[in-house]
Each structure stands twice: as structure tokens, then as C-alpha cells.
Image (cartoon, rainbow, N blue to C red; front, side, top):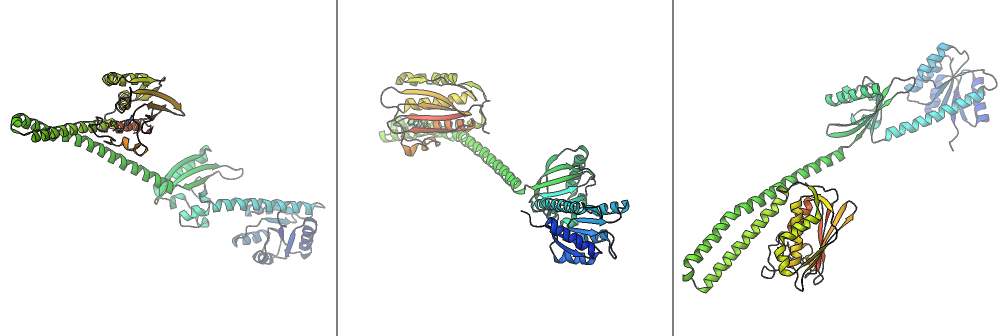
Length: 483
Ligand code: ADP
């Protein structure tokens, strides 16, 4: 419950002051103080907690309105209720202009004190509400102000004042144009005017002195007041800086990626020439001096030729790998069943030789690069055929929708992969077997990974030695190019 309202009653008639004070305290549970002139009133405001002042208008020395003005000058914000015996229009309008909260005529009959008590209640309640609002505004980390159509501050909270190294009082009456940098002030002023004219809220971002702001300009059009614009500016510097840093990092990353791709391309392209030289001179050596060399030398040459061939294969693979992103085709609606058909078509020989059985569930249409998706499936199926030791390979391809992506699975009954190597297999040239055991360079799965990456998906394998393997890859249902 609120505590009792503390009222200061000032009247040069000691009798009347006492009457009002006694009535308010006895009948309306208010705490009261009295004074007989403005000076005593001001002293009481200085020394005591007062919620509301009730003052006579006509007093020697300072009258009631002058008392109010003197109190305001000293920073007292309590509501003032003016008591008059006259009821003069002129006094009433002067009182309102000076900021008197209520205007009360003495001797209004029996009900006068009830009316006065009501007015005090209302005034104190209103002041409390205002105070709460002011506290809210003052303690807000957002910069809050009210500006008029001329761009002058009608009010500003502490945060707004801080941003201009001023106090809220110093800001009052100053123009935005005198404080903010020219271009910012111009923009804010024109938006402010527009908001006042159109009555429509505007939001925009701007910044100065290294700070960034998200601004909301709201029209304030209250009866009896010149229309103004409420400005709420939120300091978004941290967010903005993080955004800028992120953007810079992404740019750097893109640049280094592009450089890496360029490097892979150039290296693989330019290495081909010296390699060709090595292998052709080796062959020449063999042809021209073959009969003069002993068996060992012959064998060494074979190894060297073999090595060069293998390197050529790896360089070609690398070249192809580096082209997944740079030379990819457009994304189109692609029927995965026909993608599988293409892949199997290319594997006809391997399938026939191994007697592989390849089955599939119904496969969806996705958005993607058809030839790359065919390469992806071809790599997975050819591995499934290759890494199978016992009995004909049995391979099954499925697809299931999971939220906004499809999860594809290619499972086999092959040799399987140990848990330690489930990630290693996706590394460029990562192989678990010697070339004599199983042919290959180790680029296939790295390529699969890159193709799936480009399509905005992920790839992984579940497997155990002797248990077969299942390669899972996802593709977004909508098909997002990850660039
Ligand atoms: P490559 O087949 O040329 O070696 P990949 O990148 O396609 O290259 O595969 C990398 C390694 O992963 C293979 O050397 C093999 O050891 C292993 N691997 C791939 N697919 C399978 C599979 N279906 N079953 C068992 N091991 C596999």
C-alpha cells in the first residue's frame, strides 16, 4: 500500500492553513505541514518530504504562483494546488501557464475539503506515474528524446545527453543540427519532420563517431500540445562491428578459398608437363637401351614409369576435384532415379565383372547439378563394388525425407571400415589400402564430399569391418547452392 500522502499547506491566514491541514489529516489520513508564506513553504520543501503543495494565491511578498516558480527554480517538482478566494479568469490562466496542477476556489461549501482531498490524491498519483515514466526513460540504455518540428530537443534522457557529452537540461532547447554531424543531423531532422507531418513511425539506421544506431521515430500528437517526434535510438555498435568483422572474415575466407582453388588448378595443370617429360624419357630410355640394361635396371624403369603414371592419375584427379566448385554446372530439377541410371551406365563393365546386384527404393527429384550428382553416386557405387571380397556385391540405394532435407543412403555388403578410419576416408588421397590391394588414388570420397558441400548437404559413413558400409549424404529439398 502507498504511504500516507504528505501535504504542505501554505496560507497567510494561519487559521485557514491549520483548518485545511487538520481536515486533511483527520478526515483523509494525510500527513500535513503548514507555512504562512512562500519563504516558510520553500524552507519546508528543503527540509521535509512533501508530495503535494496546497498554497494560497494571495499572500504578502511572493504570491502562490511566484512561490510555485521559486520552487521549480530550486528543482522541486511536486504538484501545486492553488487556492484562491477570487475565482478570477486572469489568475486562473496565469496559474495554468505557470504549471499549477489544480486550481481550487476557497469557500466552495461543505464539500470543499472532499474536493480538495480528491485533487491532492489525483495530483500525487499523476506525479507518481510521471515519475515512474521518467525513471524508466532516464534509466533506459536506449537514447530517448523528444524533438519538435524545428529539430529542437523538448526533452532528452540521460543516455541521449551522455551521447552528446551534455546533461538532459543542457540539451533542452538545443537543435539536433548543433550537436550531431551535419549529414546525420540533416537526415534525422528530415525524418523527424516527416514523422510529425505524416503521423507515421519511421525506423532507420545511422552512425557517427564510431557508433551505430538503430533509430525509431514515433509521432507524438497529444491534445493541447504541439506535435513532436519521439526518438528512440539504440546503440547497435557491438552488433554492427560483429557483422562487419564477420563480413570481412567471410571475404578473407572466400579469397583464400579462391586462391587455394587456383593453386590446386595451376599446380595440377602445370605439373602435367614436367611429368609427361619424366615418363616419356623413361619410355625412351627403355626403348633405346632396353637390351643393354640388366633385369634390375629394367625393373627400376618399370617402377619409375608406374610412379609417373600414378602421379599423372593423381594430378588428373586433383584437377577434377578443383573443378567441382569452379566449373560446376547449373542447378536444375534432377530426377535421382535417372542420376542412378547414368551412374550405373558408366559402371556397366565393373557391374558385369563382379556380378553386382544393385537395387533401390523410389528416389526423389532434387535441385542440383546433374552430372556432379551422377559422379557422386558413381563414386559411391563403384567403391561398394570394389571394396567387396566375399560373394557378389549387393548394393541398395534409398532416400528418405527428414524435414527440409533428403537423406540418401548407399549400403553395401563389402569389407567395411574400422571406426578409426570413418573420417580419414573422406580426406584427399586418404586410402586405407595399398594400390596393389585395391586400385585407386583416394580422391573419390573427397570429391563426393565436395559435391555434397556445394549442394548444401553433408556426408558420412557408418560401418564396421566385415559388416558392410552405409554412406549417408543429405541434400536440401529446395536445393541450395552453397557458395
Ligand atoms: P579410392 O577408392 O580411390 O581409394 P576413395 O576416396 O573413393 O578412394 O576411398 C577412400 C578409401 O575409403 C578407400 O581407399 C577405401 O579404403 C575406403 N572405402 C571407400 N569406400 C568403401 C566401401 N564402400 N567399403 C569399404 N571401404 C571403402
